Length: 531
Image 1: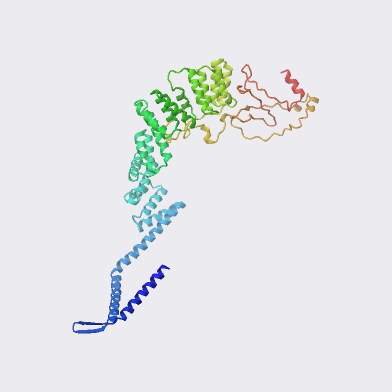
Image 2: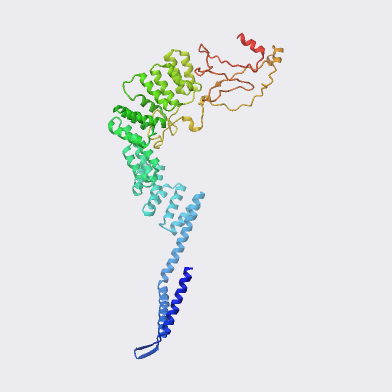
């Protein structure tokens, strides 16, 4: 609409100009080289306009003739570039489809038609990688590094090739060059960080982390920095306690739930005589992540305390997070040291029905220290062998007895506090793993027909089968699970909370007691009375 209005205004102005000139006629006289030209002003104006148009047409024609060689050359170059672009497109599609022959053919055609094109270099490198020609791929990547627009891509390719041939020095050099060229490049910064961590160069790792700060999420950056500061504090633990304490305190501020940082900060502050601040840090970490290392650091806040004082301190710590297994174990450990065996049993009582290995081991220690009952000790140790595992520091399938900042595969903050078999879906010990499902036994429990047993006591085939099963306690809040043989019925026993189970009788010998009153007749019950 605006364009229409502007067009109408332009036409109106032109018409007004012609009318104004027509209303004011005049004569134009030109004398040149003996010629005399006399005409009206309007005719002279139209003649000048016609001459200008003719001059423009002549200039355009001459310019087109003069530029025709360049235009022809440009046409052929454009046609060649289009053919090269199509060859690159076919090659990249062939690489994605896994067609090596078409990819190499397209790469050769693209190199002939579009030499120096960035996509041509990428196609050449990828087709060489696909064919296993590592030298050709590296040549293409080196060529990419000579161009500003493909330098980072070439460095990335050289880094991958160096990793494939296990050339750590070249990979490190290429990653550092890429990180220097683009500080926000994630893969380069991570590669430099991993290299510094593998060399335990924690100061260099902190510098590398600062360079890639802009490319990281805020929480991720804080966590990584806290882990690196904790590692640095551990490295300085023996040489410079003050620097170690400063580093670990900064780590606690960045990640209050980082267990190694909180435990080490508590120890260093306790050594410096600042037990109040150490208690505050350990209490906050315990509420976020109950852990044995925190409990151990909390137990030794004050040197020279008696065992009973440590027990009181552990009970106050456990009360902050009631119902936690780690708190119960910490209280039981402190109670055993203080020879308060009743308190130790009371702390472990909720967990003895389905104990973990640590719970069963502590119960065995209580039996040995309090009563010296070797039979009960053997029972609890046997249960410890079959019990569910406890969390440990685990990373990349490797178990460590202490926290490490880097996993065996070089991952920063790779160790996690968890049950090792939990990552493969195990919910119970391997030794108690359920066997393959058996055909469901066809046992008529609803109609046992005890009269047939009494009428024919001499017929062995008529006697009800004796059940034989191993009752295995599982985790808390689960019923005992039995392993019946085919065509048998098992009724689980009911255990006392502090009883290690029916594996042994009062004399320590194995004497399983299985009740079958629901399926056995009076004759069988009478025989059992004289056993």
